[in-house]
Length: 544
Ligand code: MSP
Image (cartoon, rainbow, N blue to C red; front, side, top):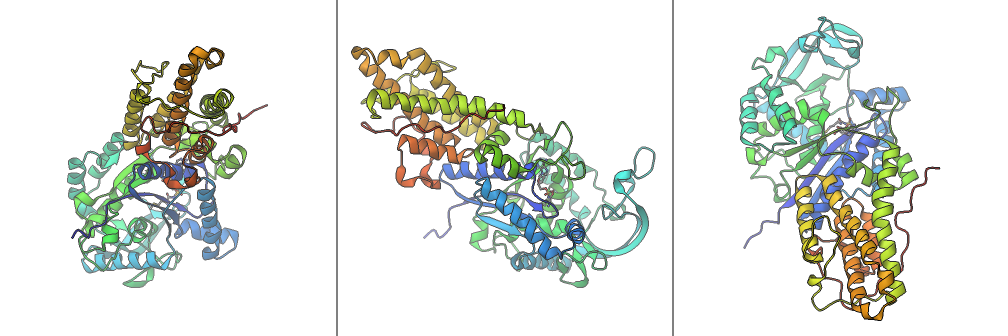
């Protein structure tokens, strides 16, 4: 008997620092992962979507001190804001990571002990220039062209400190080989090249700072997970944070190989990991892959890293210190979750940066959602009510119905949608969310063009055209049903709204399983189906 569970599509985001409130960049990453997760659920796959917060470390300790509250209390408040953001944005995750949880600590300490026992972690003294602001030792790489350390490092002092180091440089050759053998280890390609070049620069000589310092003496940082082999130290925040990806998926550090892990973990792993471009090198691309390799994860079980670009403001990076942070809560209250989700997913290309602008958000919403999709729904349901009391006539073979006004002439609406769904899936398989949305909106535009050229209001006056009018109304409602499925990963609320108004699968109203890609097949609306009355789905955003 086969006792193996079906494979689960496992997706993670980075975990968010709890030193300050969430901004629109965080909202983007959460929604991006949510859309990919929803698409895989749409395909009928099991999905495990993990996101959460990074609660330890210097930055958090400092912010808590500034606020005059203990770190544990401080992170509770910020963590709640991230939870609220996920809720408001309809981000449907399966597990929430909090790095102060007992379960996570146990795994981090288990891995540290294992690596220490295997001789992968050693104690060493480091002496050198130290940036107090950035809490790190500086090497010559950090010097500017003038040979000096730039102002971004703040006050610099000479320090001598004992710490624990992970033998990162020992695994350099392995990482080079792994990246050369797996062309899609990192998406997009240019980020893989960037990582490959960075790995090349790792020196084989640990003295040059190539090994990873994984500890901080408690005397200067105590807000962290204690090293299991030395209670005077806590582990440095990256070692702690990166481990979340396996600790919250059920990894057991006491079991030496991946094969010996519980099936609940093996069924999920490896994950697709969504991260921003800034945390690819060195954190995920070097530290994380090497950590996994060092704890015996085979090459075929390495996670795939999808490195997205950043939302900037006026070409500049958003940052608290520059005071140009965009608050996602304000945007949701003003425009609604679907409008923000749509903008964040449609106005940025995979892997690239984009500039955030309220103006663009409004333009995209008004043109694509209010004018194209919302208008199509409204016109279609109005006409179906007015001419047929909401009742549809399904021809005996609906696949022969023709939808003219498509960008390419298709023999039938069925063939047109088959090709659209094929292109749409192709885009989503490679995480081109913006292209998949273009496909869905293009369908709405084609349908509106179809209405304009067929002029159903004239046909309604001519009894000899009754059959033609029935066919047109069927095409339009059936198109809307399929479009709702296609937009559902990005616009879940609106997709439910369309299904509700079409009176379709009402027993599943509001439920995730209402949408399935298999249902995006032409001709599913039955003969005599009665659609509902139109309710404005995307009221235009008026600016003045
Ligand atoms: N806590 C670390 C990550 C640890 S992962 C084991 C961290 N936190 S962060 O809050 O600073 O950033 C979290 C994620 O948000 C990163 O993937 C980062 O790239 C992303 N973004 C931060 N600002 C962003 C934008 N302006 N735009 C898009 N994504 C942005 O780093």
